[in-house]
Image 1 (cartoon, chains in turn yellow, cyan):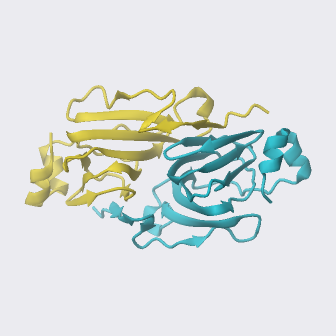
Image 2: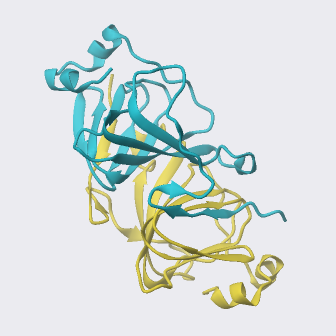
Image 3: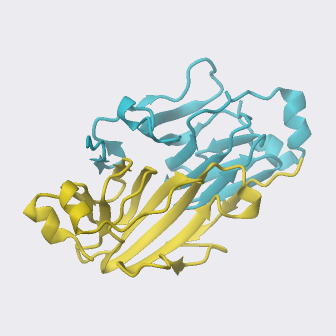
Length: 152
Length: 152
């Protein structure tokens, strides 16, 4: 039996052989955020039906405001920040778990003078995120507090 | 739109509203390990195709030696220990990532006088783990070092 099982060692939020990548290509509505593909994207990991990624946002940075059909399973493993989930806004900190249900407009913000780093697991086969326009945003995000927090 | 998105707050490895559960029922080949079901098992999280769990092993404890078809995506978030992966044995520590490929005999050991806590993501629909018998163990685990480390 070929055994593809493995350990990928970490040292201070860097994993052996795992590249720090651009967060996204194609859109520019984000700031100071990087992406690490931890498991599921390598050819010998094809049996995983999910992708495990680590996203790291530098202080002051943010992920893109977006919406999509696939859900997210998120666990914070570094620092603290804020997450926007539709019309709600939550402070988040170490080991908090975030469920992002389908079609929820969401954004992560490293708005507390700290790094914000989180694991995010998604289905291997998933729809592409969409950047909501003003009309789509206002459908979900009605509170002044959330609208003021959104970065674009 | 009903928005099921949510944040589950953590404080010192306890999550709001998440029970510390028995690791397993039905087998007894484990020691001092507990299970926290973080995401995917609640009725309003049915859209997640994966289950996100946290397992915590007290110093001296271990998970069951087992084998199954579904793969595991694992990230250590507390302490350190050892993982057996077929005929290999690896020390593991904070934020190490472990891929357990299908049909790999595996076991986690908190054998370093520390807690060992890890996130483990699996498919929602998966096969049941099997406890390998001596013959099955010897097929994969040939080295004396691994055989001596196995706890049963």
